[in-house]
Length: 164
Image 1: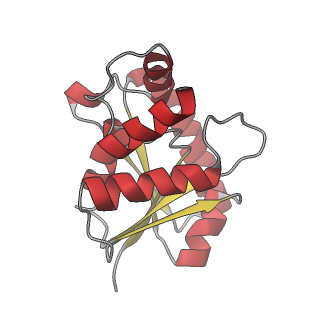
Image 2: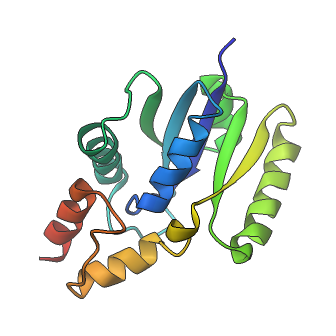
C-alpha cells in the first residue's frame, strides 16, 4: 500500500523553503498532496485559485516535478478531513525556527485528537532556506527588491504582476 501525505499551507506565495519541504516529503511519501488553504478569515495577496496556479507552474513547469507523485489542490476543511478524503496517513509540516515549533506542536496535538491514525511529521528546511518566509518575500517584492534566491521564476512573475 502506498503512503500518501498531505502538506497543507497557505503558500501565499510558495517559496524555496516550501519547495525544500516538498522535496523532503517526497522522500518519505509515495504520493504528496500539496493542499492550499482557502481559509476565508485570512487576507491573502493571491486567491486560492491563483496560488494553486502558481504552485503548478513553479513545481511542474519551472522545476519539472513528477506529476504522478504530486497533486496540488485547494481546500477549506479540516486537514484531517482532507486526509480521510484522500486516504492520507501523514501530515507534513515545515519548521524554519524554534519559534514555529510551539504553534505546530499544538496543531499536531489537535489533529491527533481529531484522528489518531494520522501522523504529523515535522521537517526542517535546509539552513540556507530557514529565513525565507512568504511574508518577507512579499515585502521585498512590493519594494522592488531582488527575490530570485527565494522563489521560482513563475512565482517571481506572479508577484511582479501583482505589484506593478
